[in-house]
Amino acid sequence: MAVLGVDIGGTKMALASFTNEGEIIKSSVVSLVKGDGRETGGMIKSIINSYLIASAKEGNRIESVGICVPGIYRQKKGTVWAPNIPGWDDYPLLQEVKTITGTIPVNIDSDRACYILGECWKGNARGCRDAIFMSIGTGIGAGIMIDGRVVRGSNDIAGATGWMALDRPYRKEYLTCGCYEYNASGEGIAKVTREYLNSDSDYTGILRKKPVEKITSRDVFDAYDANDKIAVKVIEGSIELWGMAVANFVSLFNPEKIILGGGVFGPAVKLIPLIIKEAERWAQPISITQVSIEPSGLGTDAGVYGAAYLALYTKPQ
Amino acid sequence: MAVLGVDIGGTKMALASFTNEGEIIKSSVVSLVKGDGRETGGMIKSIINSYLIASAKEGNRIESVGICVPGIYRQKKGTVWAPNIPGWDDYPLLQEVKTITGTIPVNIDSDRACYILGECWKGNARGCRDAIFMSIGTGIGAGIMIDGRVVRGSNDIAGATGWMALDRPYRKEYLTCGCYEYNASGEGIAKVTREYLNSDSDYTGILRKKPVEKITSRDVFDAYDANDKIAVKVIEGSIELWGMAVANFVSLFNPEKIILGGGVFGPAVKLIPLIIKEAERWAQPISITQVSIEPSGLGTDAGVYGAAYLALYTKPQ
Image 1 (tube, rainbow over the protein chains, first blue to last red):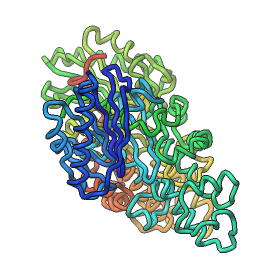
Image 2: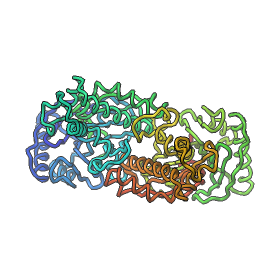
Image 3: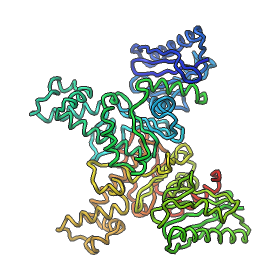
Image 4: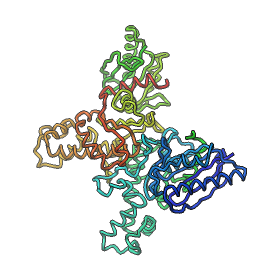
């Protein structure tokens, strides 16, 4: 008697079986070979199938499956849009997985939905009914939990936080990713740094050790720790925007918790006190005293926990 | 067989009785004499009491009462914080009204909640399950409907939209009302105009006809219509911020409708096409195609409709 949580990423997938009480029985991570949309789907089905058979043999028959996908899950159609999986513009994942799960119920949702479900279930937002997971990695998104339910919006694309408008005037660079993501995602930190490096020919600091086009946010965080002047300018700008975004969530949602996760938190976890200080300047002054702003308690496992939560507690689709 | 909707304002209160099918039977507006918190409460109770008696005599016995309050309704305690009613920091309105309604159920909620309930029931968001009412008057707030339920937050103060951070850097003037409200509320439009007038001694336009400290947003809208250069600058700045705020609602909530209401819409209704154009630059590009942005369909009646909705469809408190 167990459930299976599956977290599909662009290049790998994590699986973990859980007891009905939510304890992990076993977990594994499997690489996904590059392929077209149907090939990737085939791999995923075969990996899940093997896991179901192995679990049954070990005496932990899987009774429900939850799946976390890296993009948008269109609940009514059962299809997935995943920008990092070639060919998954509208992939019929629910129908495909059902061909191997048979009568076992399957529930799917977006990574942002799973992250907040996982954190509210077993992470740093445990027991909260109003909480937000702001995921800052290559891109920016948010899982928003209101009164115990994840916000989907009219067409499943709520939480597109990278598009938040936080700074006038509009710049044409925002066209493909939005103001907030352009300036303060992992990729944004690298991009803004490259802009400064290209416009400051006098600068000879440690960020010159690499070709400009190879600079990553990790390099910028390292240079920030070494008090490099460009890195300090970039990260201080990001802290300001992260604080403004946190403040906007506080003022609009009056949540109990805001969880900061994704690849950037990571190295930015130590900056959370500065982000809170910035948010305090902007946010509704009573709401900001009612919220706790914390790093993810589950880290890279948030997706698989959220998927297991779907398997255990969501009505089958 | 009827219900009563009550919309309490700072200086007056509106009452309307509705059939169980939601048709207005009769309505009236009563002025509230200035008094302390308990006196205002006493007036409100007495007005409701008279209405109940009169309705019963006319054959429309009131079976349920809904009340819209101008501030925050603390649902668990049944108390009201209303900045424009002296002494209503934590006024026990539910308990007080129950002394005169007896066994008739009473439901109370904030104006922002009632506005979106009213619009989703009988206004321009009719039938929507995901919709937002952005109210721009002296201040700025929003009623947010997600999947058919109004967002309250952990302590009833969700929707504090006036505190939205939309423009760097932080200014100390935002301390008491927030960045968005400071720049783009009715009072904000007047304030920003006064700042320009005080710093531009060469300006001799029509806004000089009044003492600077008496300028209202209405004056600025009139001057904008006459193509006055300061008014154009101020209103164009407001359009930019209204568009950014609309875009943020679109990206975060993926709603079906955004309703623009409050005293400023009013004169700003004719600017909605420009606001939509601005929002299109900032918002998540798919979400913006799925939303309709419209003026209020109920205008100043939105509160009394929302209150009637509370009376008809909400579980008694």
